[in-house]
Length: 143
Image (cartoon, rainbow, N blue to C red; front, side, top):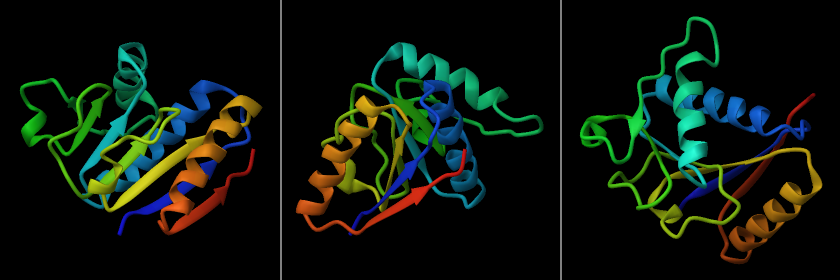
């Protein structure tokens, strides 16, 4: 059954949410897990695509967009439209809704920033998963 982890970041900045997504993706990558970063739109995909290359000095996180010809052989994908071809691994959800395909993954990471509207939407996602019996874990991060 899919495990769902909520990471609560006290910072209200959208950039902090993406930085955390990069850190989690890097950790999963080093554990050789397939990763799908689900974003809301092309603009967010572009920002995350760039950030994965530069978010931390010395890091190297090879990735591509789900529409890229290299997607079938890439361990890390960024997408926003179609469900990924991959299954298992880690889904990092940066959208306000639960992706319809979330249960294909062994783990879902929900990243919540400190602003109240984002927290409200995250509470709805938490309720969705809880009502369906998915194992939930919450991680409160320090500022």
